[in-house]
Image (spheres, rainbow, N blue to C red):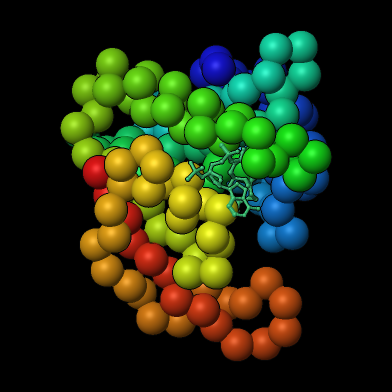
Length: 144
Ligand SMILES: CC(C)(COP(=O)(O)OP(=O)(O)OC[C@H]1O[C@@H](n2cnc3c(N)ncnc32)[C@H](O)[C@@H]1OP(=O)(O)O)[C@@H](O)C(=O)NCCC(=O)NCCS
């Protein structure tokens, strides 16, 4: 795992497009990469990154904004390694509390977060638009 820089912009944009149907724009990623006092972006994979995460940092709290592993590499422990190592870096930077929101249908992500010690704090009803079709789904709020 390593902390990404502006030079990784194209890599991260491509990873995000290949991982999420509702991927983020280049300018959004540039904001995250450019403001290293407010955001941290991490990458996993030696030669060619296969996973990434981005956190916002405010004082001693950090929020996981997004984590992704390329579909063909999912389920092999990479997300777990990436998130654990990213949390280690955040702790070194002074983070005491970690927060996140996750779609209630995202079983893999919820298992990942629980396996790393996150617990459920509550629910935001109808927070996310459904990825397919119309309607909305709840967000689960988690922290550790
Ligand atoms: C969520 C995600 C980052 C997890 O990364 P990963 O490398 O696939 O996860 P790991 O192999 O490290 O597994 C972590 C846990 O999730 C579970 N898991 C992984 N894929 C799963 C699946 N398809 N179904 C159910 N559980 C799954 C694993 O069993 C493991 O749980 P355990 O620790 O209790 O055994 C990855 O699946 C992903 O990129 N998904 C699409 C993007 C996304 O939804 N991101 C999260 C919201 S921002």
